[in-house]
Length: 204
Length: 204
Image (cartoon, rainbow over all chains, first blue to last red; front, side, top):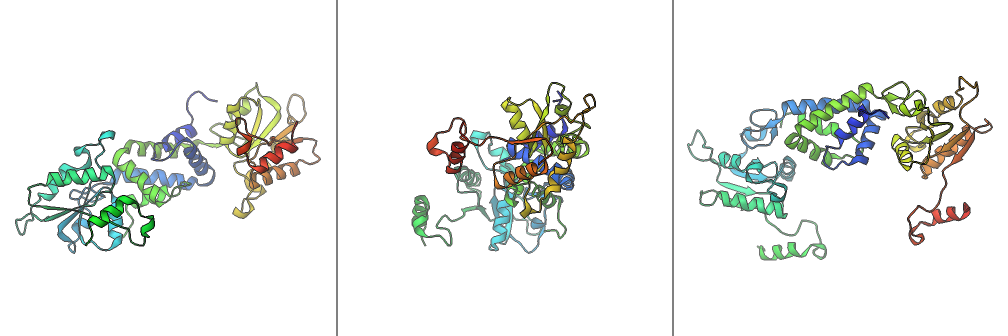
């Protein structure tokens, strides 16, 4: 074997930086690309370069966009008094697919996770405060009246929702949380106890 | 949303061409790279381009290499009368790690899989025949005396081993197969029945 790492070893190492990819998967990916899909490899190289060059954060909602302000934030048909705060663009896409929300979004690009060293400054909370304080030019009033904390119902997501609620305490902006309860289509028998307890206490 | 696909969508599509990566994983990878590891993304783009440009097949053993002939094939210390036929460079690496083989290799870069349209011509069998027929310049004799079929013990690997044995029938080259049996360190109670049957019939 050559003493300096060869192009194949360097490719396997580079693939291992992808989340969820270990050394076996990286090997399999590298062999597959070189043996069966060199066009795909070159296409991926191009797409990576293009995305790094052109994708940035929306100046208003912090999501990924190629423009100064993303298409959703510029959409005049959206309700501007509601701001749904989500962790990732994937969460935003899930809410969009539900078709039941017409307000705007703010994408934190993460959630509080003190153990991983992710604090309030890392998840875009200062940007969220600046966004909410933004004054509409026409009415000279603050646009946002309600923040919907749509972070995950995990320990970290709950902590993030709590930090959001704390940040806007006494600001006059209402902070709400997605309802917890039994998922649509599920049988009670198989629902976990914490969910049933929440569904009972939040019954309507 | 813009009507033409944006750089982020193109990146997610490109990542989905990796084996074992669905749309959710591709999204997670794209978000991770753009949010936390843009250097990693550029490094991966570079490594992909470099590998596609420089990695080719060894003229003798068909494995990936950047030279005309790979370092293993050129190693004068290796036993040249034995040729171990494996499916992938990963299998070759596994045998090397065992430290119990000092012969040469031939890497098929696949295995027979008629259902996927992978036939004899797609797995380098013609190259294997040409390799075995290669005559040593000093002795003016065929170097290879034994082919060890080290393909997987799956239906497809067995079919590949059978095709190799068929191809060299009557050629004077001995074709052997890795021994089947109970893995080292395993308790008989937990070994599957097919393995136990093979271990019994091949007992020594």
